[in-house]
Image 1 (tube, helix red, strand yellow):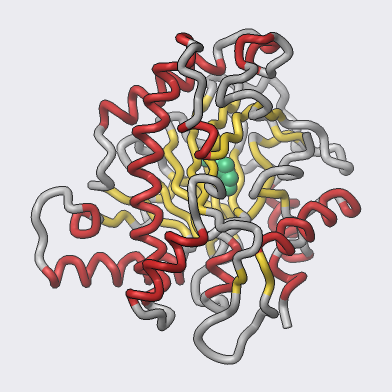
Image 2 (cartoon, rainbow, N blue to C red):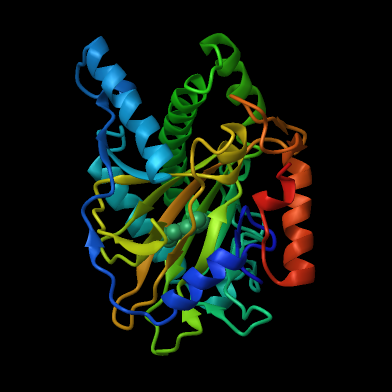
Length: 344
Ligand SMILES: O=C(O)CCC(=O)C(=O)O
Ligand SMILES: [Fe+2]
């Protein structure tokens, strides 16, 4: 599959991104960054006790990081280290199955919540290649998993626990960000709960195999922005995630106890460019395989995105229109154009 063709993330390559991408393909070693904001969100998640002032501080940090970086890391997120480890173990087992099994060519995954969920990188029209494989799973499929498939049952229950907490966390973060662009708390609770449901949100399980090819044309995952409100990412200790900050690629120092949150295109449009949907990518590694899991907060296709706070920079669009435009651009141009298509 062309990366992003049927998912909410897609490669992006407008002019400025091309420059970044070309520089980036030289694969020079970028320093890890310890500067990526790390936010203690215990006051939001209720892990431990906290005061009103601590909660206000936490909200301010989330808003600042979303404006300056479009990315931040969180601790005290409410998912235990045991559950994170279990998730990683289950992911290893799942991807460890023979290709025919996991890609659903054999029957063992069919009729399970994983049927038709498998994806892997294929060359782009410009012969660039993403060295990954993934399962793209709508949350509603997880809950309706087939209990008769004992192999996948611990996987399913682990994913279910993991995504239940992530769903709550995603809504809390979304509400903090939306409240700051002038939405009253009552209206907000309705907006996200009504428009983002388990039918519209996804979990992506990613595996980046060790890559023996050293070529500028091969990356773990092509530069892209996420076509959602926000993404919550869990990554293992291997590293390879990079994001653009001040026109340079910086490497995120991996810490498997943190979760990483990034703003997607919809929040950038909604906030009238206050929050940044920042390009990111994954580099390859010739020694180690790498695992990550991404939770994507997406609305239903008929949800309307309307810029708030100041004269609008984007025309009103529905998520369905956005997705169709992305898919059409990927089909016709081989790349996602994304938000610039909707700019006034
Ligand atoms: O694996 C990663 O670190 C990033 C994954 C990602 O960007 C995505 O799934 O959209
Ligand atoms: Fe992404």
